[in-house]
Image: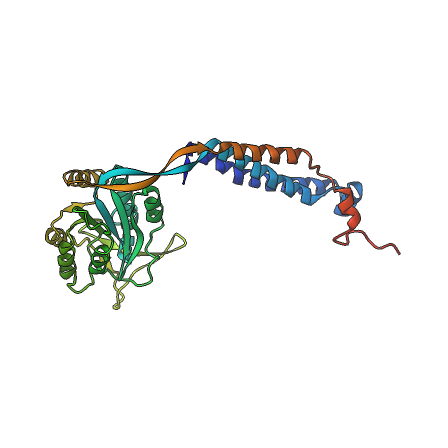
Length: 349
């Protein structure tokens, strides 16, 4: 397990592309200046030992050296001991809608990004609860099993998008049914499912049966609505550029709206609560209050302890690279030049 002690220094990695761009600009300037001074063939005769490869090699070494210095400042820490600790909490599963309707921009920046931010902020407020993540569109797929690793949860969460599932549509019932298989602790009395969605459901009324099955498994279902009742079109983008708006079979622009009634019904039937996700802070506060009112169950979890600094390895590598850079000269290496690997020397007649 790796922790980053000073993440703020990661911004210094922007120096690396700046170094590369600066090198390229310098080479272009040098080439233009040399062309004004003399012909290329004459320059080769005036400086026969000049090596173009050495300049690139020195740049690579310098970039690696600066990168190692930045990583040393960040100070990665490695967990050296895995221990078992006692925790108290509830088991929470997030089912996130990744259907195309979540691309609608009726809520900034769009429904998908809003949903991810909501879940991320909820995770930030958790302490000892276990969490899992499901992605669903026309079908539901597991993303992260029940775990106490919040860092991994956020990583999987950020990778979620509307392109990750090929089958499109929205089947809330599939998400609920998959969630019932997530809770592996039979003794856990408080099991919570958060459905984060715009409420569109193409499961032909199967959601009611799925909710009933979830209740039998002691799962409370909360729904978080993302979107507006006014709705908006679904933009289709290619490489971030708007190409067109989604249209139906008749050629009309599709307007997707928040189906609040559907989400309210599921929450009521699931012995939970509907939460408006338009205001992130208010939604997170409501969810936090609801979770605090639930009984916590004690369970064992493994976590790393005794983290040790690893900056010295990166600092040592940087020193070696900078020393190597000092001993590499821009001229050609004599013994390599004698090998004539690229047939640079003309054959004597």
